[in-house]
Length: 249
Image 1 (cartoon, rainbow, N blue to C red):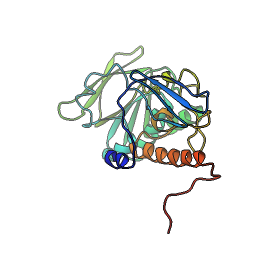
Image 2: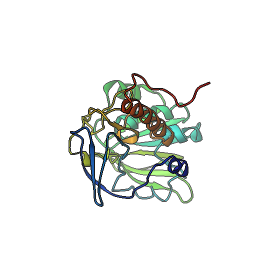
Image 3: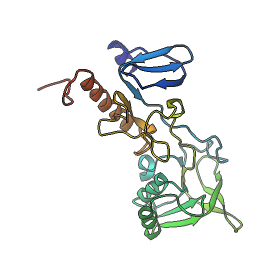
């Protein structure tokens, strides 16, 4: 993919962006080594991972530890799994897991699940879900694969729960938007807001991928968004009224 892009004239630059100026027709991106300019910009900086890991998480990543139920849920058909988190994403992923897993233990580190009421109610009403509020994940146990999780629920002694897999959605997926210095509209959780063409609140500036944090985190989805944004960008640069494909029958 990189070679194909380069063959069409794409230039790859390794630099760290420290600020931007989107208030003029020519957009300016300030980095450590240079200032980059252009009529349009596509932001795809993603979101950063958690700084603090759970003991055993890294060791068993890909062997029972997962961050994507839609990717790995089918491997746990008729088995018991744990989900750690309290966000919208954690709830949605847990509900998806109920299509496969016999039992989903939802470990919310907060006393109340931080998701829309309708989602929380659906989680509570699902017969395959056991909701444990105020439950902090302490350790993922197992040698070559996940065998159990160790957690503590507020006001109760530590517990060890046998599970075949654990899906972790703890805090830390914050969009990388600090360099934008508040120039673009964001949601309450810091996600960039875009229209159906992935254009942000400023004309000529687009955003795709995990920086939007409103979809399943898979590379193929982010790539599709990037393609749509690129076609929309090309349309606007040439003053066309609608997007057109670059092929015909």
